Length: 431
Image (tube, rainbow, N blue to C red):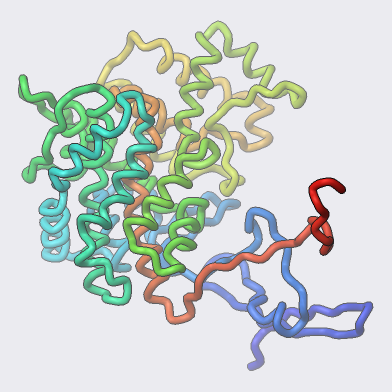
């Protein structure tokens, strides 16, 4: 049986080329244009790479039309309901769910790597007290290669695994220290008898002068949030990690590059934008006014946290996190916070308003995530750092997959040049 091909012809020259078509396990077929420039002398043009597969991958699958998200084939709904973040991190890295022995060993390894070098404490003191946590996160994570250069041989599978463990383990410690620095409070060391999310919450909110007990509702909410944000296919930050890694850069530099990409308001900063939008609306009495503004195409105001670039039906993560959100608000109180009441009222309006329903502009995961973080007492400028903690598992899984791929080459996107043609250099007096 012959392989499917895609025919391309140039009417001006009479030339034609047959391009192979590759089929994935799920999702649309892909036209392989790898030889197009060599054989035909043209590039493809795809701003934002929205129709371009930059790699093949076995990690995550998304069907935006049907609202499907799979990690290694497992539906996100099942993982969020039955799994833990540590188990999901293992799944993303190794490809299969661990048995009990494997899970215990992996959990112990992650726990034993949670501390950071004491020298990093002075590194934090080099940042201004009001520095954005993401600025600190980029710098500190990038600096880890100066501490762990003994295991950064990217061609050694064992070194890659050790780096993966270190990054997943240390990211909560580094992020919590960013928060403590901004508060002027002493850093809290990790505690080995706590779960991954509980350890993070303790490092965020405990102080030396009193005991701190992690609320199980908050712990479970954090674990689910980490699971939902662990990976999302070839998004901007993951693609950044892959592109940086394609040059042979060490894993700490690659993850730091991913954090920088995540920082953008169109990516990881979206949940922070939701809270800023709610602050602009102000109170429940202003909802109708701002909903009308959102419907007006000539008005710059937008309801942040509604709709999604990939999910054209609904965001499957939003369905899960909505339940967690309502549970957190019900169990943990915070009833005096008008922003949280405003968010819930806005959700009600959007879910029944014909304008939003017809356009499938449902609340997405960013809408509920920001509300949960606020209810847990996490400040707005830490929201993207929370995202980075979870996404590190996905980033490192993609980095490891890319490095092990024999077809891997250094990334080199091409361009459509629209600048001036060749011209001679004029003297300063003739310009």
